[in-house]
Image (cartoon, rainbow, N blue to C red; front, side):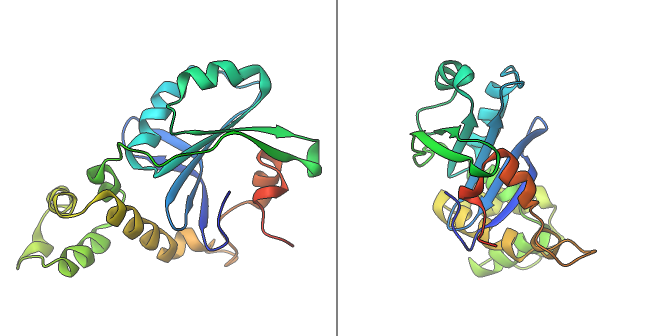
Length: 195
């Protein structure tokens, strides 16, 4: 489930092909959650699997029994699969398969999610060269990706996302960016902080 210190963001765009994760959690790892309810079609799932696979350390899909067999055939073995049980505010998640570590993350794709100033800071930390602040973002991503391993890129991405003010709080209220009503509606209380 989602760790207490994680930043949870809904409708998070993943690199390439306009793929959006229903939820991502940036905690110890960058973890994605896809929701496929009964009325949802699974036609976009193969493209979504590719998007999640580029950047998520782990990915999970929450679906309904009617979709379970097709979902199991479409998602890789490293994806976690969950089914909701119960009703409304008593909704719980039953784990069909636990998420495993993604063996094929792209460090380049993870670095592409970083802002320019975050890339500069990381490049300086790993011994960047003079003049790098004049580089294009694409070049910074390329150099950072060649210098980092997946675990380091994942940890840095999570740290940067948690530090971004516009993700950590809504500007108009200062409240967390996640809509816990959306989480309760789609996942149930198991993922929500206690009130």
